[in-house]
Image (tube, rainbow, N blue to C red; front, top):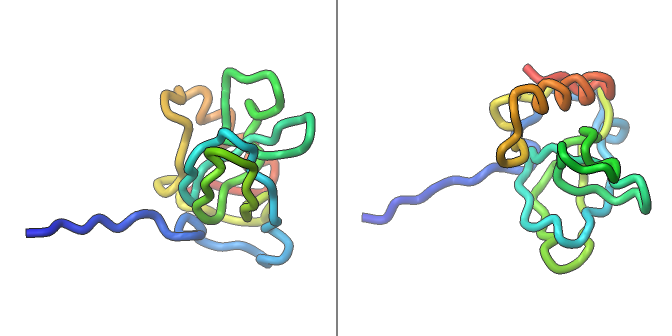
Length: 123
């Protein structure tokens, strides 16, 4: 018997947004970020303005939550284009968000607060 597993869908985390042309933007995911799933919380690297996985221990800007990846992206070997939810008003399903592995409750709370400051509310 074959077991099928359904992965995350592009934008599957979104509950509501005011206007997609306002809340989303095309961005560049920095090389080395790996294979990212929809709903991955992103940080923005200060130098160059590229995005990567939220990295709470970093000091390059990526320690601050700056958006949520819309669809899967593979930036393992090279920079890759992607779309991200960067501002609100928007409401997302907090159970569909992908946090960095090992993120603590305090780090998740800080990132949730940073996203709320952008108008992205987790419910």
